[in-house]
Structures are given as structure tokens and as C-alpha cells.
Image 1 (cartoon, rainbow, N blue to C red):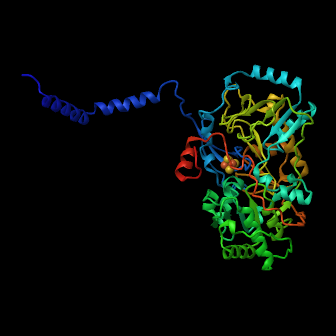
Image 2: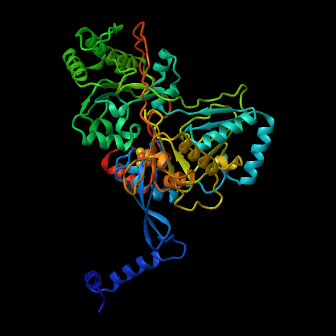
Image 3: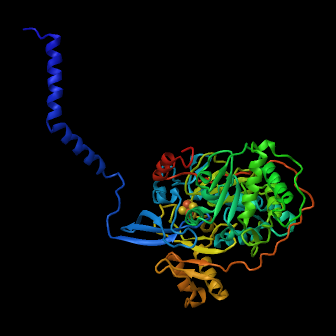
Length: 531
Ligand code: SF4
């Protein structure tokens, strides 16, 4: 009998139904999943005793306290250190998956020269040749560290320069520096004592103040954050109040608020007022008046811009926030840049410099980095230690009025062939850090907070500098005394011209790569737009 089409279909259907009800395909699927997970070249999670270590996060300057779960000597889970004086137990989404960063596909594992594989010998030879032909400039993204002191010394010894890429927070302080004559590195925001923050688009709860500030804000109903921004950013979504204005009209609104504050006698200061009417903001005069009254009734109030904005700075002068508790205060000046007299022949960029910093030097650029980002403009990419792969200092936010000092411990072994800039220059960061611990003890100011008991103790009670170093490596944080001398005076002769706020590079808080867990969190929570 000749088989018909119907017979073939019946046979195929029967075979398919039979396969569904036999265990064979499911068993095969299960076995192949296990085999493929156990191929020798697939990295296996470490097995061994589980332990907990405390340390500081060095991914950004905030220096949040980490509680790191270790298995067989490797970090396998990250959480916040409860009661930490900087982060108050909170972390940003990036940190929760940061232990995955060292295995990120964009991890730089070998030297690259203009996109091609190279090696340390070639990079060293190129550096030596170029540095014999002209000046060296070293660029630092987090001044004031032990590594910074090494860079500064090296640049000086070689008639070179030391440059700092300041974050946008520092640029917001530039108008006060200009009006008062106090260097920008000696100015800070007293955020801990402000009751109302009026943010003109500043990412206050998303990078600036770090997760610790967001935690404080959510826990204290008496604090008010008014976010003035055209888009519903993460800070805007977490703020007490979000006021949407037209993009680019921040300076006009600052001027209008100052005018209402002075005209209604809501502030003691009688300063120059803005001549411009603020229709361009999209707010009604009644809305501006209500906002001005709210700010005046809930002091100390402080206005913060996203970048350099003389109008927002002038609003602070009118509010009486300059040189006052909860406003802009003075602190001990940090060391500034030391420019090179001649154009550099070689530029060395530390791994703390934001990835999007453009090559404007016209020199041969050597960039140290743990991960490759987009838009690379360096000639040489040199693999640097990644997350928790080196002992590093964390000095806290440069705009904070209270100084803190913590160490990020080496909890993971770096891959072979990884080197930091200080090591490349032949110096040891760790011995410089130990000298700083001795100096902290000698000066005897401030307290040491320890994660084991959560009680701050005076630094003088620690028996030796070696013990200070050990405590810091075990997750302790040194907190300086609050500045007593807030004296700062800015006299405004006239209202600054209503130029739109300047937004320089790095206004957005960015990292070259994000771990898969953070990527998922960001995408699903809509915390950041792209990945
Ligand atoms: S805010 Fe910065 S320091 Fe804090 S957890 Fe995130 S990356 Fe680390």
C-alpha cells in the first residue's frame, strides 16, 4: 500500500505527541545544560568558607561603606554597611553588582596602542622616549589622595604639570570663589545642616550627595528637597517637590525668586535684584511667589545648580546662605593644580579621571583604566586595578563641609599584567597611605567610626598609626571635625547677567561600564536611560 500524505501527517503528529510524553528529550535537555555549565574553560564560582568584610567603595568619590560577602577569598555579594557615617547603610545600584565588574567583557586585560594589542615594555619605552622630548603632565580625577601626592612630586621633579579634572559639583562653587577671593578648593556645601535644598537640575540624590543623602532625606520628614528641572529625573522623582520648568530657564527663575524674596521682605539681605521677568520659565507669578515663600519659611535653605551658574549663586547671596550654617562654607583648602609652563609632550591620565574627558592636550596620552568605555581619545590604554583589587584612599565628596577618610581594601586578586599609575611611576601608594595614617594620629583631630560596634571613638584613643591603618583597612572611617569658621563673604554689586547655566563635561554622573545586575536594575527601574 502506498503511504498517503494523511498517513505521513498522522505519523509525524503521533511521533511529536509521543516525544512530549516520554522523559527522553527532557532528560537530554537537563543533561546538556549540566554538561555545558561544567566545561573546563567556563569560570566557576569559588567554593569555600563564607566570610564578611567591611570596606569603602572607591568607584566614585562618595566612598560609601560596603559589607562584602566573601566566598573562598573572593567577593560574591555586596551590601551597605549599616550605620556608616557617609552612606548610612545605603548604596547606589551600581555597587550592588560591582563585584561582577572585574569580569565585565570590557575589562581591559592588556595594554593597547591605538586600538591594537601591545605590552608594558612597549608602553614604557614609548613613555620614556616621549618624556625625554618634552614636559609631562599628570591628570588626576580625585585630588588629595596619597596617589595624588606621588603624581604632584613626580611632575615637579620632571618640570612637568599636575592637572585636576574637577567634578561639576566643584564648578558650581566657582562664582563664590570669584566674588569672595577664596579658592574654590576651600569652599563646600554644608548639606548636613540645610533644611531646604532648592536644586536647579543638580543630580543631588543621584551621584552628588550619594545614597547616604537620599537615605537621610527619606528618613527625616523635616527636610525638603525642591527639584527644579524640565525632566522627571531620578532626583526629581525622589524629591519632596518637583517643579517642571522650560529647559535652560534656571537662571531666569533664580533671578525671579530672588526678586520676590527681596520685594516681599522675606530675607534680611538687600541685594541687587534681577531685572528680567521670568515668563520664559513657564511658571505663573503666583507659583514663583509660593515657591519663594516656601523656601523662606523653611530655612536654612540652600540653592544648588547643576553646573556653574552665577544666577543660582546670587540667589544664595540673597537667601543669606553664603557663610552660614546649612549654606556655602569655608573649609581647609585642598591643594590645587600646578599647571605646566609649556605645552606637554606626554599626558598621563589616572584611572579616576572620568572616561568622557576629551584629549585637548595635543600630546601623546597614556590613560590608565580598568575598563574600556566609549569615545576613547588616548593613544595608550593601560590596564589598571579594578573594583577592590588595590588599596585605595577614599576622601569623600570634595564639596562636603566635613572631611572623611577611608580605605578601599584589596579583597580580590587583580589579573596578571595590571598596574596603577603610581606603580608605573615607581612609587608605592600603600607606604604613602601609612604615612598619612601616622599624620592623622599625630594631629589627633576627629573620630574613627568602626563597623564592628558602630561607635565613633576619638582618633587619639587608637594606640598606634599601624592600628589606624588596620582599622581603616577593616572598614573604619575617619570623620573630621565640623568646620567652626564658616566665614565667607560675597558682596554682589549687580545681578549677574542672565546667561544660561554652563554645563561642562561630566555633568552627568557616568562610569565606563556597568555590571549586569546594575544594568538590569537601571533598565527595569528606569533609573538611567541608556545601557
Ligand atoms: S555612590 Fe559611588 S561610592 Fe557610593 S556605592 Fe555608588 S559608586 Fe560606590
